[in-house]
Amino acid sequence: METIDAHQHFWHPARGDYGWMPPGDPVLSRPYLPADLAPALDAAGVSRTVLVQAAPTSRETEYLLGIADASERVAGVVGWIDFERPEEIETLRRFAAHPKFLGVRPMIQDLPDDGWMLRPELDWAFRAICDLDLSFDALGFPRHAENFSALFERYPSMRVVIDHCLKPTIADESPESFDEWARGIARLASGTGAFCKLSGLVTEARSDFRREDLAYYSAHVLEVFGPERVMWGSDWPVCRLRCDYADWHRTAVSLAAHLSEADRALVFGGTARQFYRLT
Image (cartoon, rainbow, N blue to C red; front, side, top):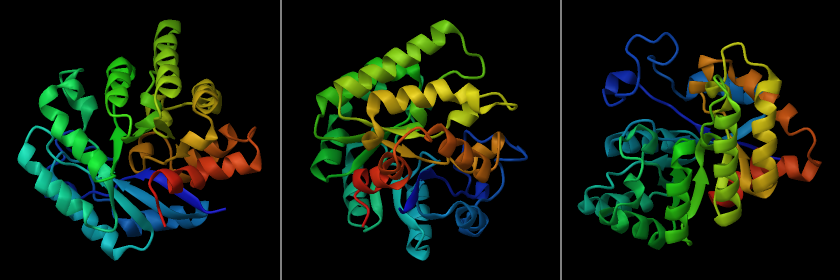
């Protein structure tokens, strides 16, 4: 069984395009490069990773593709283009010609308009993703579930994966917040062909989180999507806000312990390989 980390980041704050990053943050605002991650990958038995954008610039995507060119362990890159500039279709076509370019991820969670993805003037971008056979990483919150559902139904041929289990409110959980998330994620699972990343849960939990705090969420995702549409990701180094790579990997393995060996193989490698078409 090959273990693939379906979601991790590299960055260098000195590049200047990580506007979301808190200045001086002791965990986040420092460079993270392949040599920093390699020991954790070795310890966890992870052979390859999917490198995901963390800045809303095409320049960062070019930077990540350069890292991917130099690293055999980076299986592919999920990048960024400006959906609001139709001329960016040429940038997307250029990226698509790179053998390690997998798809795109607009940073929807940071946009003030929850319905941004449904704007008709963005149609060119979604059609281009479909025409170029690229993937779409959906980054949002439970409040985006309805609009994501409408988007995925509008472009049924688009390969979509929902990042971080749609970022449920775990630290300040209430029956209402859990129900909103659970209904939204179930609707996306049953009504669309989207996949889901078992990632990001620790970051949404309290700093003193326990495995039990995450279990209801992971169990629901695995139930409604099925292991064949769920892929594990570390969200490293963001996960370091709560725990190290090894702790989250061990926790995720325990959360999937009830699955058969074949289903665990899907969650920890097979699904990512199939969805991202990794060779």
